[in-house]
Image (cartoon, one colour):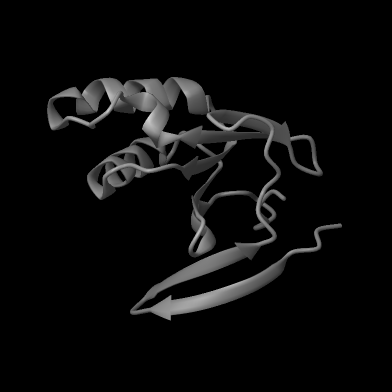
Amino acid sequence: MHRNIWFYLSKGSHLLRLLRPPHRHIRPDILGGEDDDGAVVISIDLASLYSSTAKLGDLDSYTQKAKELAGEGNDVVLTGAAPVWLYLKIAHALHGKAKSLVYRSPVTGDVVIFDHSPFGQMVQ
């Protein structure tokens, strides 16, 4: 049984769900685990994709590495200090590849970007 408290924010025609409590952590850079149903949870620290400063010229390699880390059909969490353009590109690249995508911020907590789970529930 999931014990999450769901918060909803409406902005135009889009609905964002904030998920509490945060997903569990295993490693600080590239995290993995399982949710209650045994689905794999992959967390990617985007700052680990580049050294010192992210460069637009290397965007394709960042995207490819994130896709490799995410795998197919997994629940994915994006976190870490990175430029907004990198978050946007990676999120777009993972749509259709990941079962669900969450943005994790120390300020906002977890924000569900998309969730294609047939049960409509995010991992814990």
